[in-house]
Image (tube, rainbow, N blue to C red; front, top):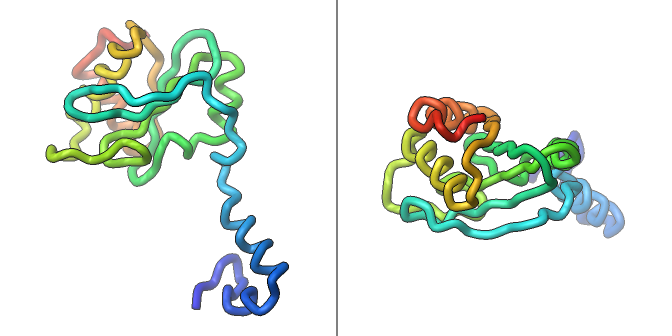
Length: 150
């Protein structure tokens, strides 16, 4: 028996309207409210097929998600940033829509992936912001590929 927000799921099963409400509540993460991207795709980078999205126009800003997350975690923040920036999000190796491959999960290699994605997209320089694991990868990108930072 699972408990969610002090509500027992077994109690909800007895009432169909409650099941529907609980189901909708569980499907309420912020990413459901994000705007539709202008462009999506998979970039062949360092043996990976990196999933990416591009939102908005303006100066490029690459957002890197946290560990065990995905690009969708930025939700309404992505929508707000895309009003004034060209926002690029990507799913890191083994996260979201980017499959894992037979290589270590390391910040160094993922930093190389970041630089490779920007090159693939024809973006010579970008601001890069990361959350949690993404922050570490942004730092490694700055160390290993300083030429990609604005």
